[in-house]
Image (tube, rainbow, N blue to C red; front, side, top):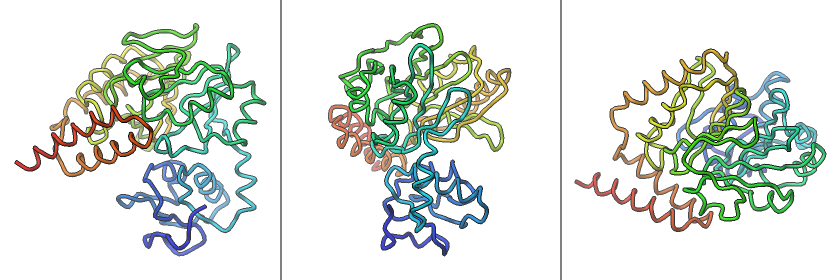
Length: 334
C-alpha cells in the first residue's frame, strides 16, 4: 500500500492518492482515466472518484499497480475487488491484473482453451491468482512477447509445468524456456499464430488467436478514444524503430477483433478495419522525421532500461543497451 508520507503534491485533496514510488507505467490512467493522469514522470489523482463506477475502476487500478503506489483508506473494499481478478474481457479471455514490477507493470492475459490454457506475459505470482488459474484448469502455455515482460515466468513454469515460449533472440532473458521461436511465422496448434515483430527488442513477437485476439506486446499503442492504432515511439524502441515499422508492415494481411497490448489500452475493432488501421500506423511511422533520436529523453530512457535489465539479471543485454546510450551521449556532446 502507498505511503501517505510520500504522497505526490500534484494529487488533488481526498482519500485516493499516488505516492513517489510510481513508475509511470500508465496502467492506472488506462483503467481509470476519470481519476488518474500523467504529469510527467509520475501519475497522480487529478479527480477523486464520485460515482460508484469511477470508484470501482479506480480501486481496480490500485489493485493492478505494480509498485503499490496508489493509496486509500478503504481496505475492506479492496479485499472484495481483489476477487474480481482475473477480470473477464471477452469470451474465454481475461485480464489478470496484479501487474508485476518485474515487467514494468505490463498487462497480462489469461485465455481458456480446450487444448490447454494460455498465459500471455505474467502477473505477480500470488495465491489469489494461482488458485484462480488452478480452478480454471491451470496453465499449459506461457507466451512471452519479449525479454522485458518475462516477469514471474520461472515461478509460473515451476508451478504449472507449462511450456514457456520466447524468441531465440531474447532467450537469454528466459533460458529455461521449453519452446524457442525463430524468425518465421509459426503455428502452435491450429488456433495460435506467432508473428515475429523485431523492433522493440530483437526477439519481439506477437501472438494471434483465431483471427480474434492479437496480443501485441510492446509494438502497438492503441488509441480507442479516436479509433486509431499507433506504433511505439522511437523513444521507447530499444532495438530499431525502422525494423519495428518494417515488421508491422508485414502484418497487413491479418484480421483481428481485439488488440491487447502489454502497455497501453486494449481496443476492440471491426475485423474488416484491421488492415486499414495497421496501414495508417505504418504510414505514420514512415513519416517520423527521426527514427533514431539523440535526445536527452532517449538517453534517459536507455539508461533507465539498462538499470532495469541488470536488476533482471540480463547483464549481457544491458551492456548492449549501455553501448547505445553511450552512442547517444556522444552525439549529444558534439
